[in-house]
Image (cartoon, rainbow, N blue to C red):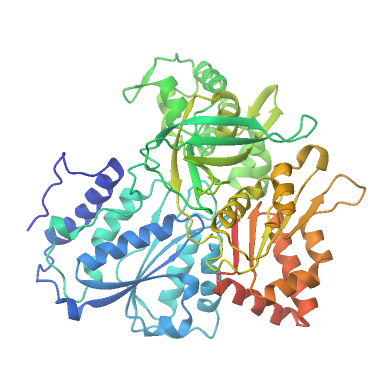
Length: 579
């Protein structure tokens, strides 16, 4: 038996068609291999299957939901949970398990998987001989810790005696088709009673109800593009408003907006010149200029490009770094360098246009925390973005998407967008619950949305914001709005930290410590604690400060304070949107 081909006029968008095709291809491969096509079990006898996800931005959660819909249509009874929602006692009772997890930062567990991993990797973790499992890992080969979270969980489950249903799949940033094909092969293998597979068995993915996606973005008109930071600021922070028109796009406070960038035309032209080519040189049937403008990442050098340049350039320092696997030295060497800098290390004519393109990674969207509530934005979606600019090697450089928007998308022009749900980062469902927000700089974005949301809902819960940046006179973005919110009582407390307005540096975590007694009191009264912004420094410092505050004002040991914080995470009262 073969699964029917999807007709070209089927009512699916391009992403849905790709998902369906991948899923069906996986199922067909099982059937061609001789899998049974026995009838699906009766509804009352559906086989339980647990689908757990670890996610930072929502991708893994959505894949998990798609997997659950497919499992249900195969006659199973799927249960979907975040990894941190499951304790070891519950895990020990499971018999069939699929885990979908992303990796955060340089090989770290995503926020909603950290507690699960700590318990799973502990010596006290239970034996799992009765468990059959499969792991789907999402990652980015641009990072050293590619799919590390999935690899760790996969290995640890095996160590505890569990049996793999199939081999783990590690997906790069273009994960949709590969993930769909893997699920198409894996889910029937997880079934104790293989089901009859028909076209109707396979559901369309739920991720893009509006039809707009990363691969099919909506061309939105930019209604507002204005600078927020003052003229004397060392930063350039801008406020954007995108018109949703008749797109059907919807979002919630806490979601992110994906923006499709276009590479800097000046960098594109310099690269073409360096390659000894012309704008209309064809590579794989497309003009080189178009490929380098819209299709490939040319600012951040890919691993393949670095390796090829090292092989050809005869550059002693780069060769020493690469062949010794010195990550820190490589990061330092690449600091402020783009693909043009690397290509320039090779002798003239040493790398052709087609070879160069073959070493690049696809140009990816950039995701930004939405800074508006749909209840107040009147058919628009707002973003708060810092334009990244710097000078190096006699050239002006900039962030791919931030400067594209700032410099080349004027009001009235358009940009490709789509909504990326982040269900794990939401305003408290209880309108009477207190809310504490820590968001310096552009980290204020989702909290502007949260405050608008609570105002529109008439929520009576208290709201406390910690905000800061370098200087008050030039970096206090949204000052008028925040002042109005304070005056009107929506913002119960506003604590500011401008680091360079005095000799001693003052940061948001400084203000947290100064107000530790009140902060702990709010937590004891049920407050949710949110953080948004830089993950590498600010979020770590805030986490340390929070632990110290809980220990000091709760009269706890460091170990008890850590348990208290773990409880906040389990209760979804300590949530982060960090990058």
